[in-house]
Length: 561
Image 1 (cartoon, one colour):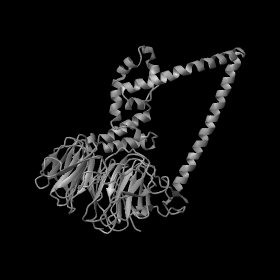
Image 2: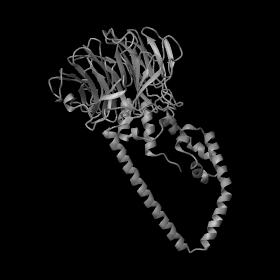
Image 3: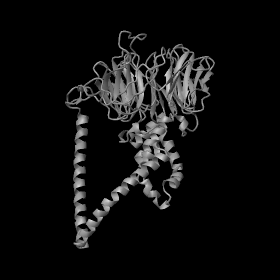
Image 4: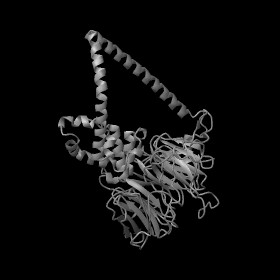
């Protein structure tokens, strides 16, 4: 009887959590289960694989009845199948596979019979005891040879890790193995997890190869390493820190955690290296639950400041959004969602808040009255991200792969897009369909450059971060691939452009924050923390970078070039 391995089952559960919108649960599970080190090819596993697998288990009885008339042969029939076959193929296809393999086996039997007769004849010429002794010696030799080979492989692996960590005289070669990458609409930052598939993409180089890209200066002292004296560690949260956001006014930093609190930290100007602990006068604790907080609904999953930096909105696993002032006082509670909130955004005017939930809906809230103004129920799966296009129009995206552009007051979407590529409001066909990442894309971010921004004379770029441990930069206007940013060893969960668009920060499960030069495509600064990283964000001046970690801390990095 075939069986599924624990690694395969863990991957299916991980994918199920992601596809269902339980992003933070997926992060925690993937971190503990070591999903990033899995050898399973994610592109081969279709959406809804876990549910399909369970349904296939229910169909087992049907398979038992149909595969063979003799129940004694059922186990033998199933030996011809792989677990992935049960997920991806229906009963008739499985029957066809087994029939073909049985026919091939029958054709091979005459040859095997002749071989068995020959071996039996040889056995009569030797004593059984000698033959058994010979087989025993042969088996011992094979085991010894396997042990030597494994020891050699282990030594090679250690040498490779040492070379990677030292980064001494090392150059990274850009990977251009092409796979279908799907992205999002016009002015929307999205956190969609997208299956990637497709042909090889040989755009910037011959046969898919590019010139080596220098990642860090060649030196044993690692000059790009950020000193601890340039890092402020904010301690006090009792669980993972999922989100962080700088106030657009002043030096306030907000963070949201699984401990049922958000915190507002007052970050001083200039260089600092101290650890700010719970109870310090420059920390405000925003408690979301006054009673027991052991329930899963305690997580603060998302937060956003209004344009003036006077009000902070938070979203939680309990389905409630809350508005706080900068003094940490609760202003109002917005209650209508029936599932966890994964995204919420203020519009520029500051009179509306938009929230997206696992309950498949998006809600526009009137900030003045603290009442919901309109609920949009178009998606057939969890709404993972939302963003405003202007003060009354916005877009939503979901695991159903649909994008809806909506307008306050309208009962139907004003535009609908299918699939996650780059779309324009001016046409129905996608502008670009990028193909390069080897695994799922976790997040994409637009650069603060181009027409209509504070940097109008600079090129508009798009950064994509993936489970393949890379970040890729694209010319968003023409869809041209610019750089593959190699340097992380595990999935990259967050990227953020600096306010001037010259640098890109990335945070990964490998516990590292990298700051890249956008123009050169190489690492200019690097910080190694003690936990996986959920989010990175810049302050408005671009001289400080915040990163929230799975080991309950927020780090503020002083950035100078």
